[in-house]
Image 1 (tube, rainbow, N blue to C red):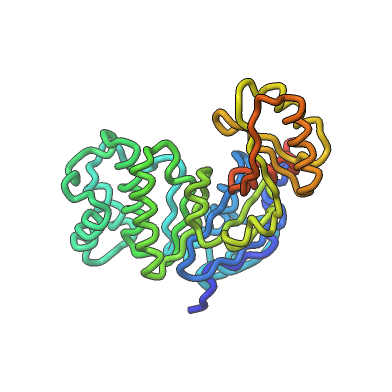
Image 2 (cartoon, rainbow, N blue to C red):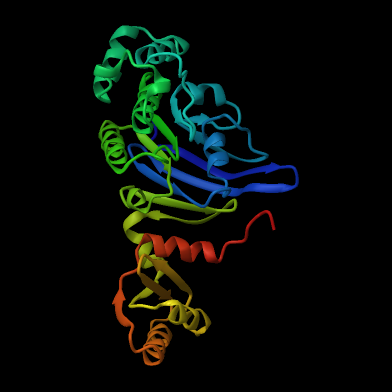
Length: 308
């Protein structure tokens, strides 16, 4: 087996006259946790569905798990675990009954043993008789992940799997993903949470069908090259309005009771910040290292909505 699990080139998908994924390339190595980021409507779900064989692209080519993405979709689907945004198991069946049903769909051997292992691995054993429809968001998430892993896939495709669950459930979920990664399972996960994105080995960022960046996570801040300052104090509205009009400022964003202002020209940015300080002496200013949230807001500011 190749060490590259996903290798797709030029994937393009249109709905009517709108291109929702535009010549998308992606290469993901075995065992990697690959973050897939972008705003709502940017084409993330469509891309994931093309990768796992649920949608056929208008153009493009590639291999997933060594199989042709255009012609071997059934073979790909058999070997992939796909977790959708919406809980899609049977709410009137218990946790165990859902897993038993999924194992029968895949025609698995040792079904009882596999179900027991899935229940134990994700901490579901004590709740196995509980109806899926009565579970909280975090427990539904665990059940959905157990169902994805019941057939021991080599590739996990997770479409915003932690949306709407509490921080503890999100942390437990990511602990499980890292365990699977250590076992050689490759994961492509879309997320809106920056604290999750930084846990990924690499990040691909897609905005309105076009890929804007695709790099190891640790290298992205240096590649983007943003400089940043923090503005604190009350009131901040006038300071924000001034910053938005000054040269050298590429991004102004509120973070709680502070403003983070960023730009690619460090000299022009500092000049703008100090001009605001001179006009609004009550504010405090300090340089900061822009984080991933600032970086992705900056990337979005230059992206064109494909509805326009």
